[in-house]
Amino acid sequence: MRIFLRAGLPLLALVAPAASADIVVTDDAGQTLAFSEPVDRIVTLAPHLAEMVFDIGAGELLVGTVAWSDFPPAAKAVPRIGDSYRIDAERVVALQPDVVLAWGGGTPLDTIERLRALNIPVAVLTPRDLASIPRHVEWLGRITGKEAVAESRARKFRESLRRLRDEYSNRESLRVFFQISAQPLFTIGAGHTISELVAACGGENIFSDLDSRAHAVSREAVIARNPQVIVAGHYAGSSEELSEWRHWENLAATKTGNLFSVNAERLSRPTLGILEGGRELCETLQRARENVRRKK
Image (tube, rainbow, N blue to C red; front, side, top):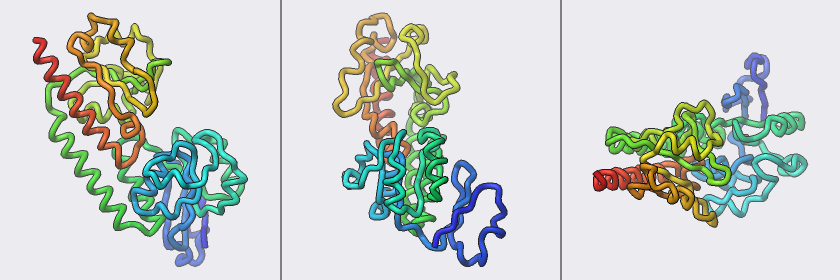
């Protein structure tokens, strides 16, 4: 039995008797959902949400997801219902999900509203920062009955993040430009999880003054801020990301050879696996420090 509660309505007025709603949770949009038992049919509207379902050992509950849901490899076999921005609502209905997980800040609002109009419970999970990741893992553990696994994975994530910060955050600071894409040139603002990882690694994001999480910038703006390190996210099959910067010989990063590519897949998805990318980023910045010292 499934019960969907809308935000702002008194809980006791909607759940009668109380025992009919043994699992009650609130999503990041303030919507309250209640279930009489753990869910057993989940649809996710973003690749990172599919990965997170597998992270807590609930992959067998995933009955539908979107394009680019490719990690772990088992996620590739899950039926597709569209991509992160356009879905086939009729196909979602046919899958009879107990809950649909939407990406706050990514899934279009009209998609969420259309599914709710079809009486499908939609939970919005918004990855605002690194702390959101273990919190979302625990949230999923509660609705799937995988609390023990979820709490264990969340605890290990927090411990690993703390160790990473302890190891790197107080090292010599470096001005860092993180390049999401070269054409058009996109970077990260202060609110992005990658910016938070740059700080954890002892770096300073040169565009931390930007309000947005991701932003288009000009090459001239980057040159004016003269980063000591340029790190480009590399995706499988992508072309050379750093070639243009090699032409700017007076740029601090170019002078010291501090032009690096890192695995964007692990850094860009707000899942438990982001710390794999985080450690690679920290090791990269440490190599950059050594290059700077050698050039002095």
